[in-house]
Image 1: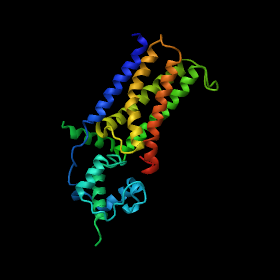
Image 2: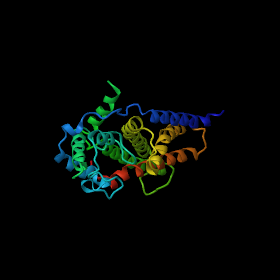
Image 3: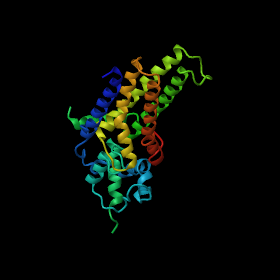
Image 4: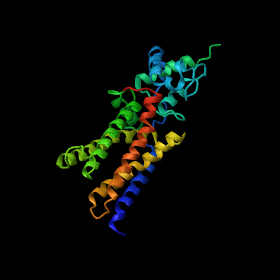
Length: 116
Length: 156
């Protein structure tokens, strides 16, 4: 086999290694970090939500974008936290993190509580 | 350090500058695409095209090399987040295309680096590898950063 094959073989090995690493994704957070709703501020979360989330979930989570309607959807903190940290469907993981995550989880839980 | 803490530490680090890890990726990828355009432009000049640019010579070659090195470095945090934290996902066509092209990206990069150093290969090999790599970076940007800027928000 000539030297000309070397870039192809090395490239193929790197592709396989990348694929294996991506399938394993070893640093994926395994579980929601904390009880974010308990430590978050829903008022601050509303600001973060409008900035990061309303493009897909609509203003105040009322829908209209590519994401589902969150208003009055009856979501619990763990479900929201998992979606934020690990992504769901087309929603990428990690759109917000840290205190902003806690705040936005508190806000989403507040708007998702059914009104009656 | 526990594995879960690595993802959190990474998030804590990038959010000292950016609003989120996704925003950081979008901007790192955008910077890499800009440098890839520099790569393609300077490569074209090295091959005798785009004669309105400065003369072929050490400055063009140096710009080409350093833009490539910087572009590569800028892709590393994106690689870390996409590959080791998010992993290979195919929930819809955009993400599937992004995941597949992203999986091949560093393979083509490795091949291109080897092609640069192998002077026994035919003349078309290097521009083909370079343009393929730049095109893949463009597809990755269109299916991630552009989506973020147009669907989530345009900002840091």
